[in-house]
Length: 467
Image (cartoon, rainbow, N blue to C red; front, top):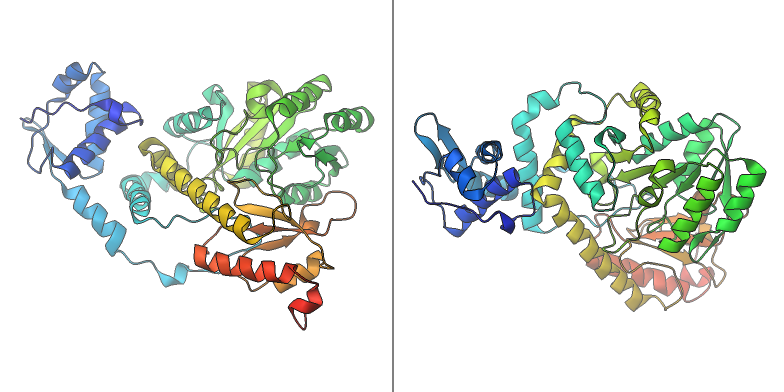
């Protein structure tokens, strides 16, 4: 029997996941080798001062990964099989070129992971989850299984959101959640508020539900609390929508003091806040969400599209209280039935084994590098951005209009969207959102930015002979 007693502090994952992780780590480093017999579960539990069931779950997890085999009456033995399979799955399996569909450059895309080790970990998670493939193809209870809600609670807890589990729901993306929430809070003809320059999806939802969307004036810190209060008195709105961290499209982050002021007004006039925290996990030091400042009046939506991947189509939604959960469930189930159990299981796996943190680290590092590239190419003060955002907000000059500029950049390989898509009220400014993420690499991005900078140096007629 191998005298193997892992140091669980080497892993930040739940203890049962940590046991499997450390078996894998020690197998790679040579501390364990194929054929080693691991300590009996009760012996290991006693030596680590943890529950027997935790060790049992850890051994089961390791067996799912192919790291060990268990034999009744003989014990648990290291196989080393999974490492070989992981390498083959990560490197030898070619992608299907038929999946290389056209990219929608109108969306604000995060940089896509391209590090081999990270991609291998992401694929390994999918391989592990596939062990439960049949059960994950069944209809499931709405809102996520208990283990998925536990993972969601861990993830949301990093943003200071710590609700009871019955208030957490795993939904098929932020957009369906927004549609369901606004459908609950307002009826056709009612007024809802947002930033005057806001997420285009909010405009689409308001139009679909026939709501009167009113944009609030903004300064460098976000919407004006005074204007918010005045609109509450005059319009009696049913809700306020905000995207307060790395706001799409302006990249503005509302500071803590302004968030408190907004929450105070919302509470005074009993206006629910719908907080779209799509980018909340990107900064390392983002202010506390409004959902943490005023949880009793806030619908908090922690989407995974911008921090893990839009293809997951998942968001973690926190309701302000338990009495609102049942109508929310009914509203969302009527149109979406459930979030994909397969995608949910993959997200849970990535959160538990640390892959999600690896993806986040990559996005932050790559976004910062791309913002540095922008700063090297475009004149200081000519655009608005955050050092870690993956888009910029670009006001136009020299006779450029948003239409001519968008047309000029159409084939540059980066997403340029005119301000019309984001403007709630009044004339749209001559500005565009430029996305720096997606599948484009750094060299191609630099070329596109050089092309853009050259065009902006003079009037549009100097950049091309036709538009």
